[in-house]
Amino acid sequence: MSIRDIFLAGVETAFDVFNDAVKTAQYTLIVDNGFDDATEVLLVDRRIIKENFTKEDVETLSFSDEIQPTDVKGLIPFVDITGDVNPGDTVLIEDDLLGNKTFTVVAFELDPMSVLYTFLLRKV
Image (cartoon, rainbow, N blue to C red; front, top):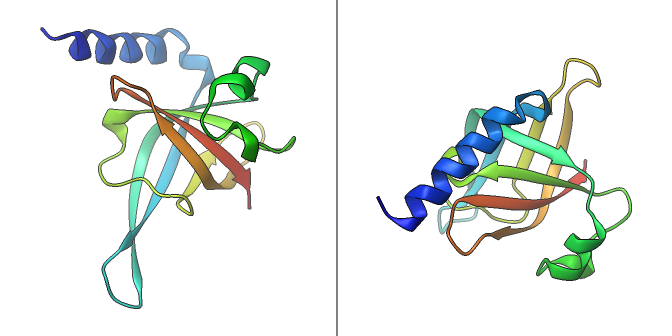
């Protein structure tokens, strides 16, 4: 078992432990096919934890200068995204209590072990 496998297992455990905070999401990848029209690829039943940005996030994330007060942070396991992530992709977060909300990916960061995406999400 590699170190990356251990980190992947840790992310899976965290998403299991904090199951109440995990929401279901539909992720739409915008795939540039080299022509005038881009193709959308819909990934359904993805897991996401949505939360507010913290002071530590603002100090450490590569896109911290783009964070606005109404933006939210989305955490998605690497294994849940099959394809290239790009700004402009959309995320529909399903929430039984607050209703479904659609966000645009403004920026993102993949941790050094490539196990967890941190997204800067802006409400559409």
